[in-house]
Image (cartoon, rainbow, N blue to C red; front, side):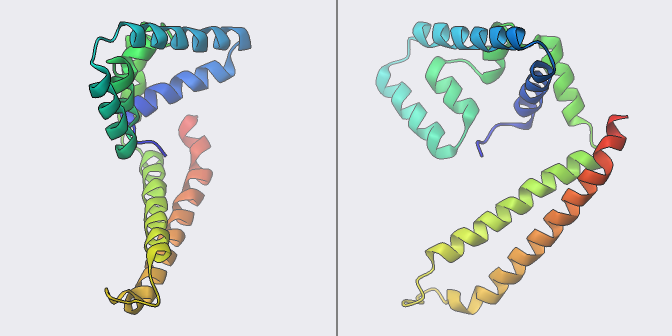
Length: 172
């Protein structure tokens, strides 16, 4: 999953939700506008190619979508979407305010993502272990890895259950 700050995620999610509920031709027009504005931004960017290439590479390595957008065209994601008319400044701000609201649903959603990261991290640790050469004593920690993974999975399921049971209540 790409790294993108929660403000950008909230605003873009709000836009996509609105477009998915609306007219397909209007949605296509908005997406085209975003594409055209991005092309204009790229064409007008006067950064040296070596700096652009380095910034793109660093953004990819950091898995940072906003930094990638900055590297490619010199503008942040917010600018791309607001300059294209896909979303207004007011809509962007309202989406951020809504996202910022500390609700149990938001907490549970963030916790699910954190639990997924723990699972992914444990999987990665296990995938790089060298059973034949236990220089780092990792074999002694396998049971810890397993219990940490199991705990993260159990908590993730509890959070998901809470989300499913309460998401419709929060909307109403």
